[in-house]
Length: 297
Image (tube, rainbow, N blue to C red; front, side, top):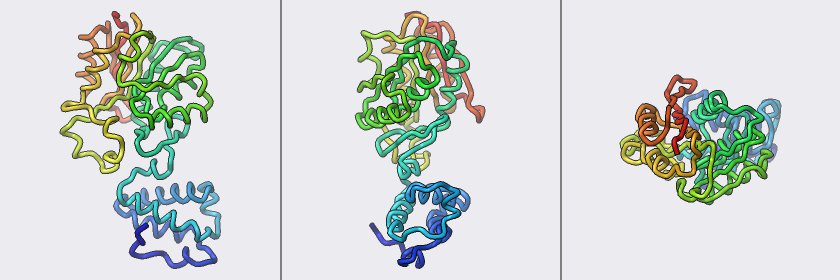
């Protein structure tokens, strides 16, 4: 590990140091985030590293100096714009925390709009029996959340990445639905042509080629395969519509979309066999979800 230019003096003493000193140093190193966010991220990193709560962190008089090199290494990684979730090993989604690691797409609040839209408008109750596929599951956040919300549903989750499937399976087991979700490696829907689903949901890659350079540096550290959607960002939506033989007649397709893509995806769905489409907004009033219903088969 490269030695930071200025190590705090007291955290390196045998007696330990107050957390405030660690946090002050770390926040200074992460100044590019702004004072408030830098402080918050440092608190999260130190809580996770020391295995204590936020309250305990502020009540603690001393922290063992043996932890400081690890804390400094995480601060240095964050300066290199490694996403905070990778350094914490977890990300919040809906009502749970999901394990994440490098090579796995980090769950985002945007995708909660997909869950909320489906729960409110999908036509199923908590007691409903139906079969759904989470296409491109990543950390498993969609499949696991819906399996918990609909305890009688049968779930299948797929991804091309073995790393993602490993992490998703671990999340499902830890959150109590491991026996109810079948995880499969697949690139698209053709692997499921012998199966039938009432619902297919996906947060597909939708970043347009021209937008890639404008993204936050942290996004560039996530798997490009899970983000890049081709020249106009719509490649994966076309792929789903070509391959949706596994969607039952009368079934529905629910997808997350990027800003400005909803109308185009809605039009594509109507042209490729859905009787109707709906567009739903996220909490920021951005058109974030497109649902195609009444699949003609």
